[in-house]
Length: 317
Ligand code: SF4
Ligand code: MG
Image (tube, rainbow, N blue to C red; front, side, top):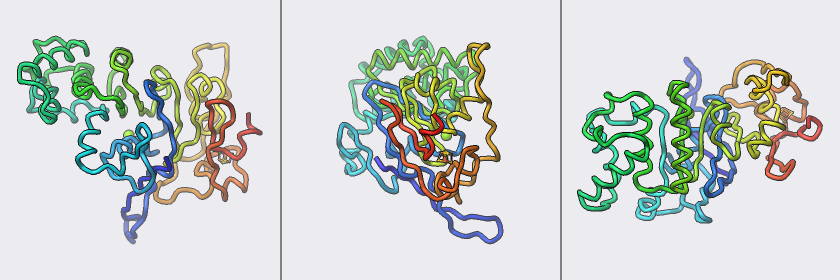
């Protein structure tokens, strides 16, 4: 709720002046228990920062993270330590997130040891069980990450994230580094694990077709702000924000007879150091007016389950 994360850095090459990046700028989102909320946007839009801020891996600048109604940002160390078990993250690159000197067994059992769960024999059993659940044989337990393919390494990453039976998992570009051929398999595994273990996912990806595959609802981010939130079917059949329309117009429709009007965005994503005034999208929006340059649009409900932050949403429907 109203979550922000600002970074302070130096701007410019010669005359380096302190400047602020509003990586996450007053974001309010709801993730319902048991669902997958997809979070999409171009790289640098703040998706990963939002995911990490929600998990308290980096401190928030302002706002709240309400988990079952309690603001976990107010938790002290001990309470947060208990909460951490329920909150996990799966990273993009399983190779760099898995310590190359640890065996598969050590990698997956580490969280159990940190939380002092079970005896040695019980831990062994738990690790073997989760390994089997993610589709790897227990004969792999004494091997090292480099001995595995990308898809297998991501299965190890998933096993490690799920060994503590978490409730909420942030998947940050979890399949983006994988070959297209194994991507669907890992996505299916993640979906099966979700059903089996009652997981709630925040699924971050720059790829709208990946997000479509796994999400129940989708939030679109642009330069630190949420532009649109909708049920999956609503978003793909009736996108309302000009940015979402542009993103979707770039991916081909499954039905070749249908044609979407291709919207070509002008220019690049503006620098987050100096984001545009008013609607941050106005420098690239084909529908921008003077009002858009001055007034920040807030998320408004346009139909049930469908919110859009655009001054002209009604006209453009
Ligand atoms: Fe475009 Fe204006 Fe809507 Fe922003 S508020 S998306 S600039 S029409
Ligand atoms: Mg990222």
